[in-house]
Image 1 (cartoon, one colour):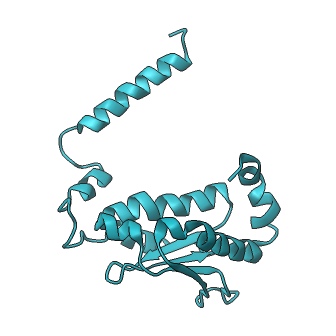
Image 2: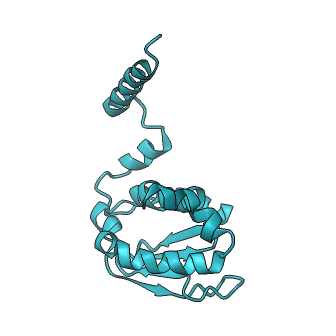
Length: 169
């Protein structure tokens, strides 16, 4: 999105027209996201106050989940960041509900995830077919034991970047 649209989207669309905004985002997700996620379609979200007509997107077989085969990557690299992006940048609630058995993912625009849903997503057990055999779970939870090389590299880059921004140090 061009920055001027992202900056103004909450005040121009999401707050004054939340239902319209949810429908527009559902449509845009199907038009702009099929190449990334796989086949998807706009659908209704019946458990919403306003009926949720055309405020959902069903990803029929998520490529991200199918390729990663990892619930932790799904939750921490797709579900949570995408929900946070829509809430923080677009001013629009989004709940994503992956189905690890079928590979589907249901998007519900205009619906905030409950604390229970989020806790359940974070506690999803590793899939039997997960190639990391739980390694990504400990990495995402920050309890992988010894410090990883990538983390040391990131910290070094952060320090270097901080020095470049403040040359007076």
